[in-house]
Image (cartoon, rainbow, N blue to C red; front, side):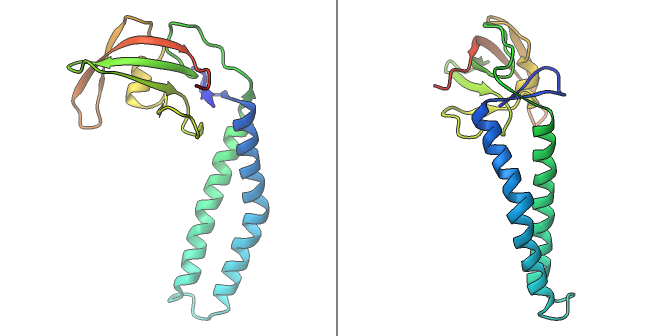
Length: 166
């Protein structure tokens, strides 16, 4: 699954779309029924203020509803198929190889959404500091980006090819 440079479209492989749709169907169907049963059983135990089971079930319900909203948003903007990509230009759906300043070792990863689980290589989000710094850059270009600790780190683009599923 990848997001294009247009944040309104999420490109999904058919496999990723099917997996996310199945998860949504399960959570919004059987999942809601099961959590409602847990809440009802906990209510029957008595005083809700001191009922740990009730509070845990309500928290689980909140997390499940948040995931349902997230999946609904992803699937609403999804386009199934291959994202438009240009070899040699970094973008979502590309396998990118970089070299960080001060390090001779090259690092290869897939620039894609976190929802693309099961990838045999590391996945970096296009919205991460590194992902947004290199997005749109070409092979041979160098760019610096800000690390979470506030320091700046330079990175050189070594290669960028469409992801082939390795």
